[in-house]
Image (cartoon, rainbow, N blue to C red; front, side, top):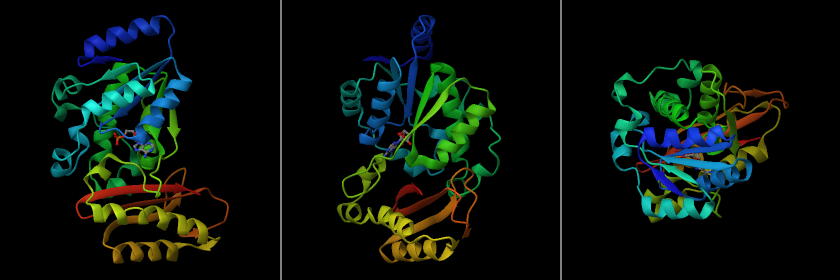
Length: 280
Ligand code: AMP
């Protein structure tokens, strides 16, 4: 695996590859890699000729400075996992490489209601930051395919919109959420859970599964209210549990029994924020 730190160097390397019609699969990450990231690398490796991964903890997408400062970093292990999974190129840029004119000058994207609902409501500015960094990375890498995880469901919709809006010539590929054996969605933030909270954490996914089991056409609001109560009683601080139209994220309270739905949840255990979702 070749590691690049500078934009100019990776650009010329990838341009030469593109000139020989090599297909590029790209996985943007913030590091502290786990099995979820690795499923994206494996998928890219099966579907494209050259796999490029980036590790960059993007300051503009953190609305909470503490969360940014405490974001785990496990670079040595990340390099080991990526090499083992068949990644060819790792891009490790500095903030100055990504935002050469300063992060304040990064463009603003019109994301419509997607920006202010659910994650957007609880993390103001988050999706602007995500779009700024991914837009910049796509400019540098120019991948044939962009690999994202369903774990960040709203982020997938936002980035599909970005790609469409900006006319970027890349195909967005979405991989299913990889889970621990007890159902907890793999996440870099899981590393920061206390032992007691780690034991509680799978309750988020089991709440989603209970809703899936109980849902019927008609009024469905009581299902999310029940799940929220259960989580709050078990020491979580729930930001939201919502059942929504899987295509638009518009909340659904009366279900016609046909529309494809997604249940989305975000909750804190102490100061660690966990998110998960389930497509029905
Ligand atoms: P992050 O490093 O958290 O920014 O994530 C980088 C990419 O990995 C994003 O597209 C995530 O959605 C994806 N990802 C993170 N966790 C998982 C998981 N448990 N399963 C599948 N994809 C994931």
